[in-house]
Every structure is written in C-alpha cells, then in structure tokens.
Image 1: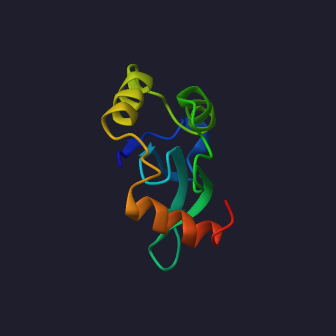
Image 2: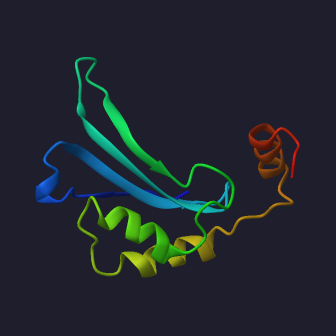
Image 3: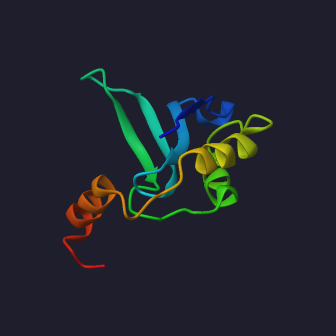
Length: 108
C-alpha cells in the first residue's frame, strides 16, 4: 500500500488532511478526506473513496476526487501508477482472497 498526504485547498480550512494512494490488497486507488480534529482529538472522516475491492482502478478518477479538496502535486499521477505496477493486485493471493471473502461474504 502507498499513501501520500496532500495539502488541503485554502477554501477547505476545515480539513486536516487528504490522503491518497494505492491499496494492492483491494486493487483500488483510494482517497480519504479528514476534517480537523474534534473534541476527542481524532480527525473525522469526511469522505472515503476506494474502500471496496477494485472500486477505483483509474488513477485519473481518484485524482479528480482528491482535486476537489487538495492541491495535487506535479508527478503524483505517475507515482501512483508506479505504485500500482510495483504492487499489483493479485486475486490469487491467500490474504487477498480472505479479505474479499470477508468484505463480500463469499458473494463474488
């Protein structure tokens, strides 16, 4: 899994962090938008995209989601693609099969 922390846009001063990356186990790119920490000092999750198997397989799609909330550094698309190529999703991997069975309850 890769994970990069992005700087929220100035218009989103209520955000703490936007995380983006590649999850080889799920075979999906992901983006998570965190609000500023609340009373329990934990940031709340405002948006979570790419949380199910193969939900977001195109890097452009996940960058479009993240761009609504954060600055996208030059070269991030290429880095995410390199992450995907370096750690491809392997549906035959026992850990991946177990994870998919848990998430899908054996219905795939």
